[in-house]
Amino acid sequence: MKRAGLLLLVAVAPVATVAAYLLSGDPDSGDVQAGERAPATGRSYEKDKSRTEIESDEELIADLPPGLAAPAKKELAQQLVASAENSTLNWRGQYGYIEDIADGNGYTAGIIGFCTGTHDLLALVERYTKKHPDNGLARYLPALREVDGSDSHEGLDPGFVKAWKAEAAKPAFRAAQDGARDRLYFDPAVRLAKLDGLGTLGQFIYYDAMVLHGPGTGPHGFYGLREAALKEADTPSQGGGEKAYLDIFLDIRRKAMKQEKAHRDTSRVDTAQRRFLYDGNLALRTPLTWKVYGETFKVP
Image (cartoon, rainbow, N blue to C red; front, top):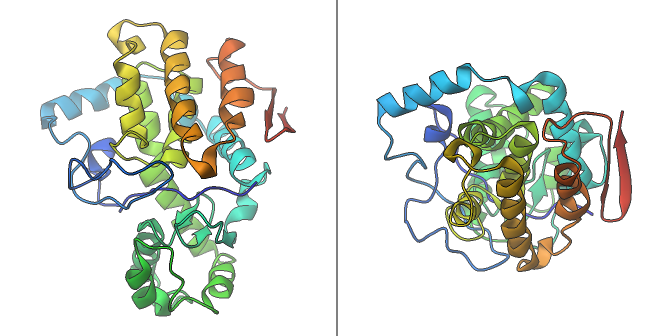
């Protein structure tokens, strides 16, 4: 099963990781209908935190183990996500992936599902073009700006798919995709999970939720899901139990997925993340065996 369309955000120069990842400029703009993905720009999630509070967070994180950010665990995280997004462990084989999966977000492409309809693909190409102005995707920037926020292919067909695949063969564009993934998904998810007192498994659960649901504040965005979980349970940093909190977070996430046509198969939760949790594998130790869409995956 190919990935469903994703909500990503425009990358900006970070002040302190999560504080620099932009969410909706309109407080209500995250409240999209089930299955929809709306681009978001504007305010930072931690906009109310003072610089002193942010610096305190950074000091706390610096004293913690690397967790999911450790090279071997980060590799494992990409494999786990790829098993659910592309039915493979070979995540590096997905740089050139591009397809319209008919989810209303236009083309979905690359290692983390950048979409022509959700602004992130446009932001990726714009950022890449600043460093590499003669790249093969630059000529599609006017069309990408026009179709942003829609499922339209106008101005992209018939050449954009071929151009994406060709550019994906270049190390520089692969590095650009890696950088966007980390800025918009991996780094903020892991950072917030650590502040919530979660171990490596919890950090991955946040990361996978960020990938699938996008970092929106509405009921179907990552931050909205977290807020809903916080109403039912305390995080470990608040004195709650890690297993209990993650179990509730996964319940809320599963419910949100069931409301979205493109995400109704919840096996990435049911027979992967929930299994790790119930096995007590909070450190996400290997070897691992899990199932997604009925297919079994193993990492030694």
